[in-house]
Amino acid sequence: QVQPVESGGGLVQAGGSLRLSCAASGRTLSSYAVGWFRQAPGKEREFVAAINRSGGTKFHADSVKGRFTIFRDNAVYLQMSSLKPEDTAIYYCAAGAIVTRNRVGYDSWGQGTQVTVSS
View 1 (cartoon, rainbow, N blue to C red):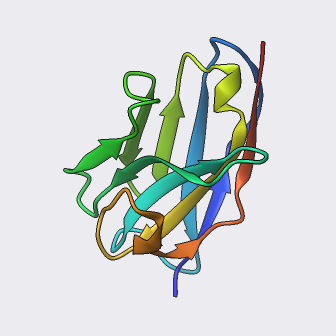
View 2 (cartoon, rainbow, N blue to C red):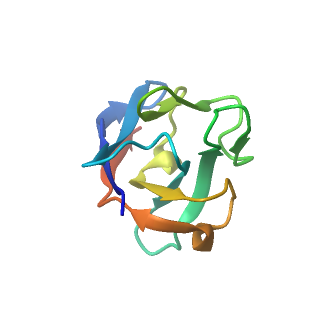
View 3 (cartoon, helix red, strand yellow):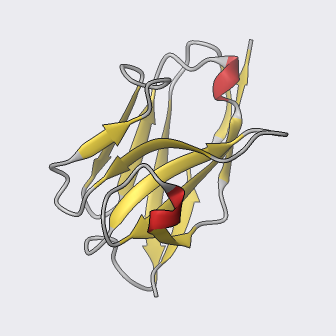
């Protein structure tokens, strides 16, 4: 079973950019659809973006459209721009068989990476 591993989180000022990466420990992610989700303190985990195996189908949450972009090569990336304090959360990547906005569609989850946006 694939084990996603996130990296690239950190502290950034509002308006800044970060790129998150999701790689696979022990295997490649190329056979999987991948989703990015985030969870802020006291809130439920929410969908951010997802991409299918070929990279030809992508979904983005309305809250991040125009600011975040998901793409992939050997890994899966989340390019985040124009960051806002409300983007502060732990960001998780997850692998599954089909691309979906629904977190129950993903079987394998990473440990998460913290993104903090200061005002």
